[in-house]
Length: 95
Length: 485
Image (cartoon, rainbow over all chains, first blue to last red; front, side, top):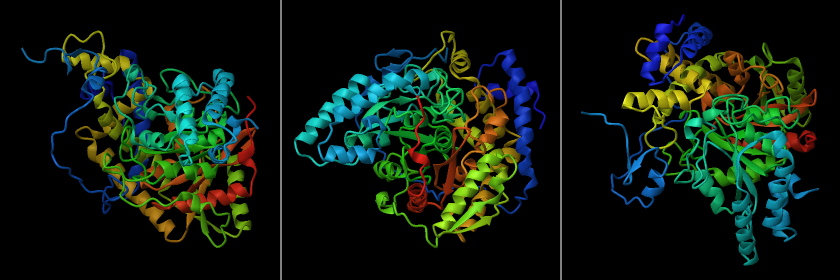
């Protein structure tokens, strides 16, 4: 699979990842090489094969939707880059 | 022998007989760290004062006549992608340079309850993405056997600190080989348990369907003791399995008579160094001499493991790493005038090259138009690899292969060639894809660098792995060698 610089720019937008021009160039070349290698899996016939997402059987596990007090809110918001009165502060997202 | 040179079970025996104290043990290990850490660089954070305070508490507890657990007073190193309340946890990434977790990972909570003493946090490839620990944003950890070579990765700090006697036990995590490959490179024991055997709560996620926490230790007995302490169901991790945990010490039996052991043909062929191959075949021969029935087994789908893995693991990583957005913790770019600029700039400044590469690859594999060709196809290949293991385990009790295709490589040797770095996990990756357990134990030396033997078992057969590994260890001397530092 030949990856173009346009592909790299598109994927970087999807991933919300800022890239320098050098990085874009490097990733275009490296992703092409890695995907070219990954294409060996196309040699395998998987028409009748089910996909595996988890190797060990899993089922959804639900818990009661119950409000519990948070004892260490301060400890949690202390990690925020910008904190305001025990809340996370972010740039304005609506006018 | 100095205290720092001993295993957890040897130190436990001394503590039990009151021949030493937790404080003496901790001070011995800290003394060792002060002599060798400037050469090895295994640690991100060393808990000097906290460890000594904790050791004194443990000694009071012992003096009060309370019963010791096998971990009471034992210094434990914790990989820096596991949350430790109040202690800096970076995942060796700049994006978490100032993150102080408000909670403990379940495995950390468990060893604290057992009376173990956290001695420090160990270096890793950023977010556990790598095979050499060179992707750490902070420092390059050196292999204690040869300071010009890598310790392997991503749990390179944990493996190196065990090899250098800078800790007694160490936690690692393994997504594609990140416990076993560094164990192999550093000449220590490393076990990746069955997926779901150990809670992942508080482990900073890389690829959630593959990640598993496990022990890095000086011998097989310590691995069994340490797994006892960390295994079990956890309501906080719904992928941890609700199965009773056996006492793994009971599986330390020096006997492999009539066990059926398969040597995987495809993992002794192309790409495997001839000296490594020789060590593995000698190990197989020894097990045969000890009474095991050893045969070659062909597993043709394993060679597709690396390709499938780098699509699946990166896809999961791209999703897991969305949380680093500059809002709740970690780095936020100074250029955050609007919300999109905050996302783009925070992630550009905070992530290193390998993490960016994997986010790009994973996002690509999941994106419209490519999902079926890459992600879904890789999930189907995962099924085929799992089927190949199921078939092998219908005939064999355990399988053998090298842990890594070569001994430790030189620092800088593979950093410009991501694909060649990825291929160093060729023997370990299929095990994660199948969700099964595997252990790496020392089985020889090439040019004074250790070689690791990988023993693979079916799901929840850790007891079988311990039995085979223990038998091999009891009949060899490799694990007794120590690097000169």
